[in-house]
Image (cartoon, rainbow, N blue to C red; front, side, top):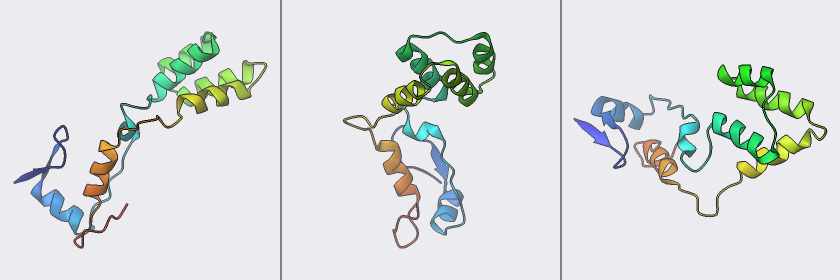
Length: 121
């Protein structure tokens, strides 16, 4: 037997659901939980460069291709005359949307309930 918590979500085996309810499972959520309303790290880097109207330096391109996005943005902030510009741009890009989509978060809350139906997140 399987259980699905949302129309677009995966099916969970009954044994896993029982283990979750018994408090025997720890679920780790990555950045995909906030998608699609927030950019992933690569898109955040891309949009930061776009908003600042600058191009990646060769070393930043290399780090970007290797998925080292923190290094990319750190390098950018060190080479700009105003290093706070990167922080400001990223803060604007990560601002909470006016109408946030919380479906993924509701699913996590449903998954986190114990046998007494209390959230354990």
